[in-house]
Length: 68
Image 1 (tube, rainbow, N blue to C red):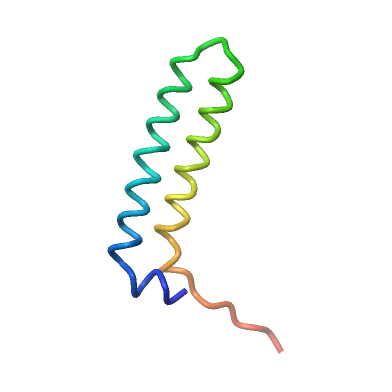
Image 2: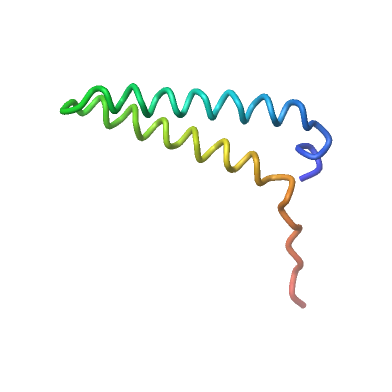
């Protein structure tokens, strides 16, 4: 995807925001031990971390070739 290669500063800023928010959510959810809300917050934090990783990997994605 060419968009992420062309807008590197936007990509870095978005990755940083998602990473910090994901780590903060995971730690906050961990502090709510014994409550189901803590588990939900931790899962949301992990989702944000996976989103940051997905955005990081987008410029390295190769286009798929169709087989004849």
